[in-house]
Amino acid sequence: MDRPIVYPGQVPADTDALTGWMATMRAFSGALYAIMGTGTVFDGLVVSPGTGLTVSVGAGSITAHVAADTAVYGSLGIASDTVMKQGINHAATTLPASGAFTAPTTAGQSVNILIQAAFSETDTNPALLPYMNAANPSVPYGGPGNNGASQPTLRQESVALSYVAGTPAATGSQTTPAATTGNVPIAVVTIAYGQSSITSASISVPGNAPIIPWKLPQLTPGFSRMQVFGTSGTLVVPNGVAQAKVTVVGGGGGGGGADNTGWQGGGGGAGGFTQGVFSLTPGQQVSITVGSGGAGEGPGATGGTGGTSSFGACCSATGGQGGGSSKTNAAGGSGGMGYGGALNFGGGMGGDAYFGTYFPGNGAPGPWGGGGRAAGALAGFNGQAPGAGGGGVYGGPSASQSGGSGAAGIVIVEY
Image (tube, rainbow, N blue to C red):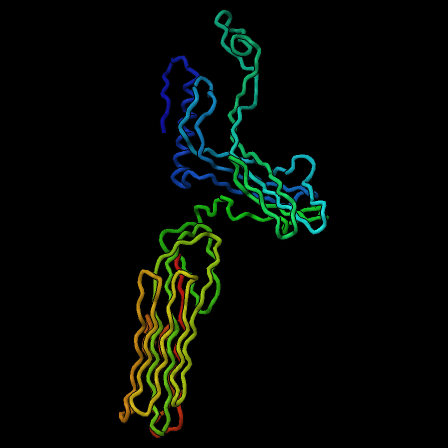
C-alpha cells in the first residue's frame, strides 16, 4: 500500500491526507479482488416480513467493481481506474419507505416484487469549514475565500435498496421482473389477491442472487471432509464447496447355489468402480443411488445381479453379475463397470465352481476386499465389503444350499 511521507516542520497539504486514504482504498480493493474476483456480491441484507404489506431488509453489505472516483475528491481529480468498493447497510431498512406494496385487485391473481440492491456513493455530511485567513490568522474564513458555503465532509459508500413490481397474473403464472441496470436481485416477494400481510412463506431468494455463499472459517484445504452413503439419498452441497472428489462402487453379485444331486455354484462378481472430481454449486441437491447386493440363489439358479450406484448424472458403476449354478462347471459372475470418472475400472470376476472336485467359487473381492468365501455343504458366505461378491457353494452330500449374497455398493463424497 502506498503511503504519503511528511516531515517535521512541513506545512501539510490536503493531498497528504487524501492520497493516504486513496492508497488505503486501493489496498482494500486488492484484498477483495483476490478473494472474490470482480463480480458484484452481497452479504446479509436478509429480507423478512415487515408490518402489513412491507418488508424489512436487514443490515449487510454489497461489494462492487466500480470506478475509483467519478467526482473530484478534495484537491484530487477524477480517478477512472476501477477498484472494489464496499457499501454497508448499517441498520434494517423498510421497503417501501412509505406506504405499502399493492396486492392484485383481481381474484386468483398474484404478483412478484423483486427486491434489489446497488452500490451507492455520495458526498454528504456538509459543514461550514474554517479556512486560513492570511491577513488575520486568528479569525479564520468561513468556507473557501470566506464565501460562507458549506462543503461535504464524507464520501459515503452505502447500499441503495429499491424494488421493481411485476405484472399481476394468474397465481402460478406470474413472472419476476429483472433487476434494473446497476442493481442485483436479493429477494422476491409474492403477494396474492386479498393478502393483507407478508409472511416468511411469501419471501424467497432468487437463484441468480449473487450472495456470498461462504465465510473463511467454513473453507478447508483440499478434500478434508467426507460424506459416506451406504444407502441411497441426497447430497446438499455445503456453502463454500465448489468441487468434490467422488468414489462410486456398484453392488456385488450373489453366489450360485448347490445341492446333493450335482448342482454347484460359482461366486458373484464385484461391482464396478469409478472415481473423479466434479464441479458443484453450493446449495445444489445431488441425487445419490447406492446399488444393492445381488441375492444368493439356490441350486439351478444364477445369483442375483448387483445394483448400479451413481452420483447424479456425473458418474456411475454397474453391479457385478451373479455366479452361475450348473451340474457341470459353474462360471463365476462377471464384474460391473465404472463410467464417467477420471478412473473407471471393472470389478473382479467371481470364482468358478468345477464339477466333481467339490470346489465351489469364491465371491470376487471389492475395492476394499471382503469377497464372500465359498462353502461346501453350507450356504455360501455373503460379501463383506462394499461391492464384494457373494460366495458360491458345492452341495456334496447335503441338501440344497444357497450362495451368499453380494454386498451393497457405496458412494463416498469428499470435499
